[in-house]
Length: 198
Image 1 (cartoon, rainbow, N blue to C red):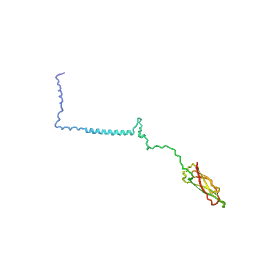
Image 2: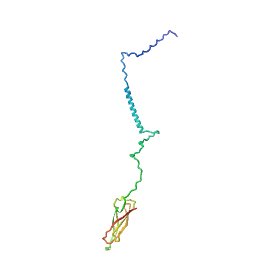
Image 3: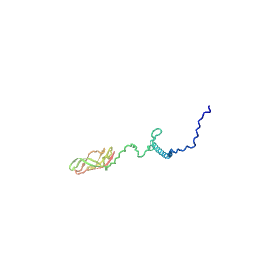
Image 4: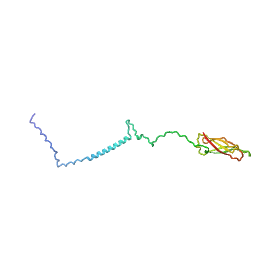
């Protein structure tokens, strides 16, 4: 190598301090501190996180699912209160009850169907009972047979005892009674002495 080749001079070392700002260039405005913006931004992020967490928690408890992906039931959903509509147990209808029937439950009269008189020898009179239930006939047991015993007074031989049957609440079956009176002026009377049902 040729030792006479000139080498470029080495660069001077950099100054220890930056050079002074030129006087003809206006200085840059000082940097604004962004501490307030950072604090406000952080507070907003915290509030947003709390609100989002609350929504997620509420949404999870109201419609959460179990490991199988099926909606899980909560204790409130599965509990039964007195206000919950529950299908009533189908109980059989109770047997209907009917009032007790006795001789005071009816009134009775006699209807004369035939009359034949023989002067001073008296009369032969055919009579039938007219029975009235003193309550509502729907109160009577439709399946029961009521046997009503009654006495007719006025026959010259003494009281005549007869029985009539009341069925289906209104159907009355009886036999006409033939009464012999001592005179044409004899008046007949009737009274119920007994009522039985079967």
